[in-house]
Length: 162
Image (cartoon, rainbow, N blue to C red):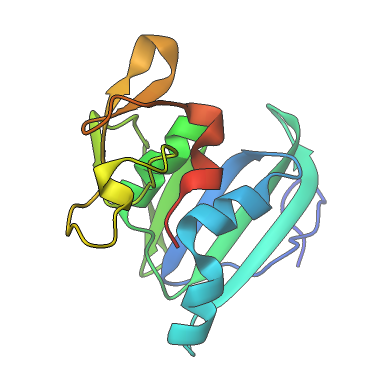
């Protein structure tokens, strides 16, 4: 199958699912971690995932792309990805039709990211408190609502709850 410019498709089109595009080259493993794709593979037998790394791009030179057949990425997870990779695009495919979701930096994040401060109440097993962060967009930081610890956007993948 060749398209109009003579390039070959690396992976077939999908009828239903999600395509995450414009991931910086060799960074798809970070996206897979944030989206918990390893758990998805165990829980959803009919879902397939194609990860393309270091492919040519007209705008970025090189990029990674993730195609997830028969599963839609949660918009909250897409927004968390925008903290780390501001230029990613998330495309939802339904019945072969593409609708683009522009991931945005959320004002708050609850439950998906651990506070790096070990003594924070959100890390105490005896307390049923979900971690909550506010976004400090100008500084590209998250701030814990309980202990005020700051977490840089680039450190988010290390603190994602799986």
